[in-house]
Image (tube, rainbow, N blue to C red):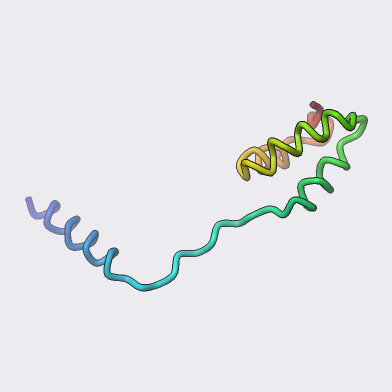
Length: 74
């Protein structure tokens, strides 16, 4: 029971804070486009399709950037 009391106190304390939350990292559209332009032999149609998906989801872009260059094909 003691642990639940501590959790409630911690939760209440967290709600009282006025510290601003850190903003999430956002990749700019120009950075995404530049990264896609580095992929060898990427057709324009594939680039546009990939760009459309990557601007909507930061995690997809991060995953793409972790791949070795030779694996970055559409």
